[in-house]
Length: 154
Image (cartoon, rainbow, N blue to C red; front, side, top):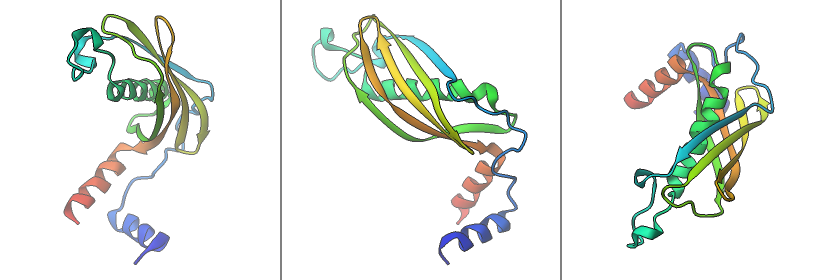
């Protein structure tokens, strides 16, 4: 079986809780989350060979942008719901050396049902170091866990 019918049949078989909570607070477009970080050796690349060339690594830059987006919407979620990342598009524009602070900013750009889209930016003490977009979905955690359990056993 393929397509929607198969997915609906599988959901019915699993007896999953609802996908999206009717009583969930609306997430306002324009909501902003911010997170400051001091770049330390644990967040920096070390493969260039010169200690003076250690900068904030791109994977960690993306990690903190995602965490910032998650934390921006978390206050609007009811118990049993969480957001999960589904898409990231980030341009790492400039290096940030160890010892410099970075502010990660995530702004809710759109909310469509359980989909939340963000505009992202990271700025160090001198300049914008990253820009991009991110998408998260609001999930019912017990439903998500049940689907994962079914995936493991199928």
